[in-house]
Amino acid sequence: MKFIGNILWFILGGFLVALYYWLVGVLFCITIIGIPFGLQLIKIGTFALWPFGHDVKSGPNDTGCLSILMNVIWILVGGIEITMLHLSFGVFCCLTIIGIPFGIQHFKMALLALVPFGKTIS
Image (cartoon, rainbow, N blue to C red):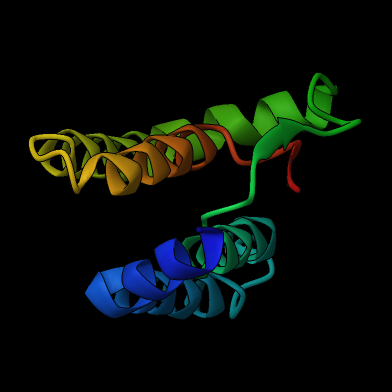
């Protein structure tokens, strides 16, 4: 079932979402200051490509000072906008019964987009 969900996700826009995350992540990596943020965008893009069967979990550095500081900067710079976008897509997808699994994936991506530092994808 995960395979079918991932294929449908890929065809119905998952590739474009992942491509967007990767492109912006590479642009962030051009500057030295933006490298940590770019790496997180690339991580989210990889998760956005095949989200079915993967979970977002707290990593060993989730409550570390650096992760908290980077998450606060992330939220202030653009994390809220990305999160709101995924939440609105999730609500829109959940309006139909067929779209509920896709909405759940958007909700998982919204959590990762809000606080990506210290999270792992398993």
